[in-house]
Image 1 (tube, rainbow, N blue to C red):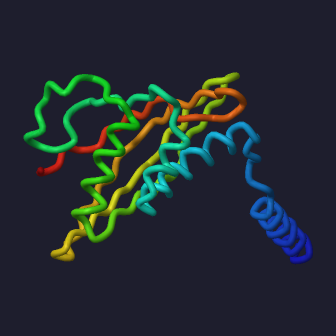
Image 2 (image 1 turned 180 degrees about the horizontal axis):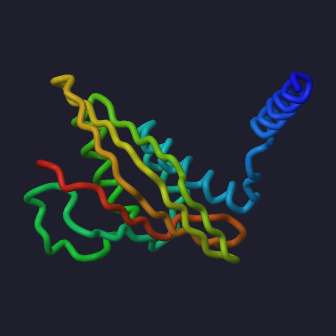
Length: 166
């Protein structure tokens, strides 16, 4: 009976070890490609390189606004903004008024269907001013990408970023 229990224990440990060593589900190349575009866009913003970030954005791309980003900015700004113009404006303000700005993006869902793709992310921004105080925001973003001339480009971004003080 002891030998049987020992064999069962060895088999159970073996199964658990094999299961823990199993490869994670493979990411398809198309999913990796669109995820890489989103990650590169956000890394470039963190590095204060707006031009590199916007190189991954399609001409005519838009930011979908659920509400104003900051209190007092007006609620009638419209549903969409030009994504290129938005980041050129935001970048000019962020990078000259903050000591540090970091965007951390974790893709949580990626779907590719032909020449259109979506990437849902959990996003965290950390903004630090001269006073050393950090403002941390956690929110969800969804990126819509289009394959244009063989390259994936961001066509639209929407988020549920909370409204913050001006």
